[in-house]
Amino acid sequence: MLASAVPGTEAGLVVGRRAAGALEAEVMALLQRAGMPLTAVQVQERLAAGLAYTTVVTILSRLYGKGLLTRAKAGRAFSYSPVSDEPGLAARRMHQVMAGESDRRTLLARFVDELSDQDE
Image (tube, rainbow, N blue to C red):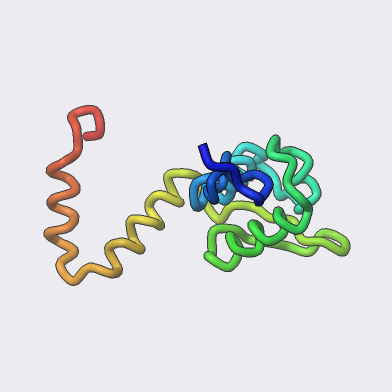
């Protein structure tokens, strides 16, 4: 096996790196479970990943920018909460997909056709 001069990598590949969007999903799930607005410090304390404060602030800012979180001033910081519950966020993603389609009727028909009996 090739060694790499870069710590945390092996033969130039990052070892143990999360999939794209995994941190955002983890933060969203944490905020959903909290049931109340949290500041970046509170999110950082509750995450098992041991992330730097600046990383948590960046993730929260990106989620806010995507319209997935609301934020309110909490002293000198912001507190963040999800704009919707999990089903609401899934519906929002579905709307975004549909917005890019010219034939929405066919898209929805195919989606419904592929639902299992448990989904109906």
